[in-house]
Length: 231
Ligand SMILES: [Ca+2]
Image (cartoon, rainbow, N blue to C red; front, top):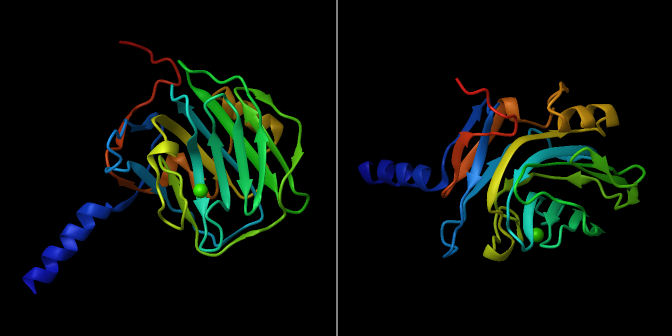
């Protein structure tokens, strides 16, 4: 019995515990993972098994000049069911199911925060990327609805359901203010998000009430997206 209890606690320690927390004003800090053994990442828990329309927004701060995953949502059938990557030259790859669109060489801050929003509607297949108050024209992406159990990670990009992490596309830097909605958020609300104005928080993932599980060397620290008022 004692051995079983010990194994249970060891398992909890290695996989982390999920918690729901208001992360307003906070950031996840993903340091470098030079040996690739720690695989720092955060699993985000959303209460749905179907996504046909969505918007995901987040802010990231990173100087990495290689491919890195910003948002990775996998199902058993599709490792890249909904995935957003950034390449070293500032190109962004949006992926739904088996379909991909690459937004080439968008102006990305290396020494400041970047606010990114990605919208997609499976009915039309239309998708759009917003970056720091600007946006691309709308593009056609896939129409395949996301179905089944979801596995959402930041910090690591999934090449298989709940795993398949690689050091060469992991994220290194800071992430804050991540929200996900089950609809296309209005341009006005996205602009407001990017300017730190008021907006309705995500109904699938809400930074102010985030159900998440931390794994590996990830730190929760104060974010400085808004310049702090020093005492
Ligand atoms: Ca992948």
